[in-house]
Amino acid sequence: MRLRSNLVEPAYKVLSISRQCRLLGISRSRYYYEPGPGHDEKDFNLLVKIKEVQIEHPYYGYRRIWREINKNGGDTTETTVRRVMRRFGITAVFPGKNLSKACKYHKKYPYLLKNKVIRYPNQVWSTDITYIKLPTGNVYLMAIIDWFSRKVLSWRVFNTMDAMQYANLLRETIEEYGCPAIFNTDQGSQFTSDVFIKVLVDYDIQISMDGKDRALDNIRIERLWRSLKYEDIYLKRYETMKDLKAGINAYFNFYNTARFHQSLDYNVPDEMYKCFQYNELERKRAA
Image 1 (cartoon, one colour):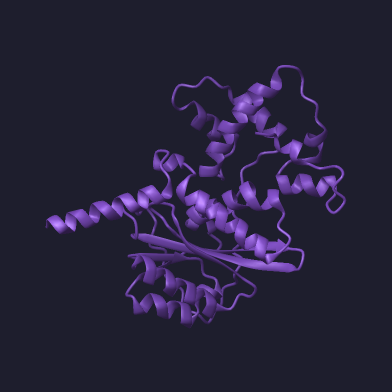
Image 2 (tube, helix red, strand yellow):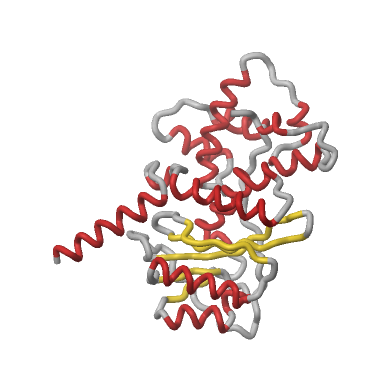
């Protein structure tokens, strides 16, 4: 595995070195940094551990990452964790404001997930929209995930923020996977629109919405966006909608079927989702 600084291509004229460094999440000074002898291997091994923690807890600073790394008896020092994070330009990432804007005329619903224990698939789903830059302009990615298993149930890339197309994706997902007990969104106008709310009401699904300017209320999908962008999109720099869709499809297939999650005891989302569904079916048959 190559260090991110090795991914910078000085001869690539379309993007400057500074721009490439920003996309890779490293500072320009780190690109030119020459480490002392013996540091690279140890620092890289620690970097892997830091990134494993940060993918699950992107808002952790160096102190909490240090505690997480050492909770099973490690002896890495807090100073070393801080130094390696600085070397590779790693900082805590807090979600920004929601992409979709709230409409003051639409009804808002309370947040139902505070202190909620998630015990099984289809107990809680959530969705969000993130934008992706292409040379031709911005496009918008919507995904629906299951909170228990972390499985990406559905996704689609759109050219506009039209609420009807988001509602259609929601309905298609319900028809394929069944109904969740609770569906969580932010307060964006697409999700508070009549057409979107109608789908949830038609299926008698409880509606939950993040508090205003509280993107961490929907932290699971925020982690998904971070994983997708840092592990795929920022590195591959898609040029066309066709290539972007193919890349997202490949990444989400990997994410669901092969990417181990620390929070799932190093299982993958598909296994967690399907295993529970099978056990539930067997229980009903035996009843």
